[in-house]
Image 1 (tube, rainbow, N blue to C red):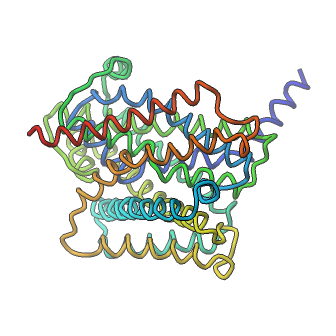
Image 2: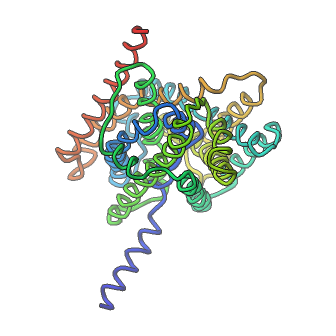
Image 3: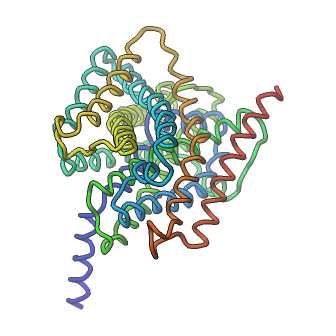
Length: 413
């Protein structure tokens, strides 16, 4: 009995030391754009999209597990491997597309901060610059260990959406039925929202950040099972939070026929329907998610581009040791924050299109991953199993199918 107890505590301590990359990467997907997407999904389509989170969980576990496995076995980031195996030219174009996508996502994070400022009665011209300075200072002056602790703390604050979900008092039997009974509508609005939901839950930048953070944390192959558990927990937690956001808006806004376009409008509409506490929890969740993601997305971009170009990377390095890494990180923050401070900026198209763009770009990133993880020269005995390959191919085909469906339905109306 004592031996089993010692083994349990030993395993627990090792897991606590290893955990981080999987949970952090997954939770960042519930960012300002994601919360907006889930809010609109619940308000416009009720519970009809909840079923999609079940296959999303499976796909997210498989995809992020491949990243962690490649990181532990090769000791290299995804962009680094793409450059080595497919050449600098392919890597360059992939990085250009990734910068474009991540820049739109970063703008949406600062849009979320601006929206939160208005919800709490604070000027965006005060809160946005303060948050921009904070996220810059955190990464530039911190170390990987200190930054990771702050990120894990930010993950805990997502529980505000769980609390707001219970305050909305939904019919849980109806929620469970909707999660196991798929409903599919072949129209432009539904397809666009479905691609958005998938795109914000499984985003292209995630694979680059996940693998880079595992490499920087220097997780050993002998501890890989704990890293895999970290990925699984992250995949479940992020989707449970997303479901609660959909449930809150579906049970209140959808039933009242209230149409919204942003998470800010969702929070304001919840106040008279679900009470001020639900409103404050929803608004606080938006602020936390926006600041958290405003750190990660520029960081992910810096990791990816610098790895792809062969430059020095890492939060543990100082500015003079990795100037390109920190310069790119700083530039994306400045651009993202500055554009939100401009008057009459159309935020809604930026936030929703950025999520759909993630869904359209994802298949191309997965194809690179699939080729790399099945390369025996790189992975040895740790290549994919047949079931992993089948499920990954299904995910790629599904995303291409949804993207084509959106394209063709745009000509129907």
